Length: 161
Image 1 (spheres, helix red, strand yellow):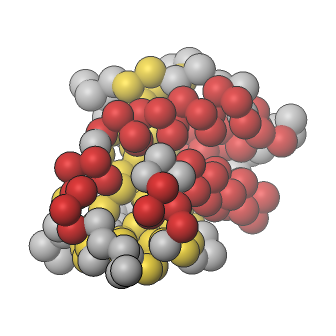
Image 2 (cartoon, rainbow, N blue to C red):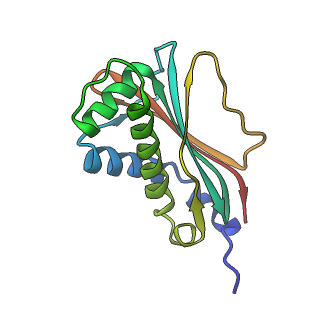
């Protein structure tokens, strides 16, 4: 019997899965307590975005976006190192955090967990760039805070079987 997620799109797109995944990765893996904060924005002009793609029953991406200062603080908590710039270690760390978020999120739905693969993380940094997905089937987007820092996590689904 073929597996389909089309009938359970509400379960797959449930925003509580994103919140639970962020809590799991940040609290358990990084020792960071986060709160969902819809009123926050990314303040830095320089931003960093990590993207991990989904392929299989669901195609789309997990997108982790934040300012440069937040990126350095987040990876500092992960590695125990201090950073003065967004270097390759910071970028690699953010890619790994995004990978953990994507894996935790897809693990919340058993059919998705078993029938959806993850791409290698890609990290983009700079100013004035926009990541565009044409007509997604659904998108879940939340802003979170830790300490005085804000970051965004977005799950974008552009295809669901």
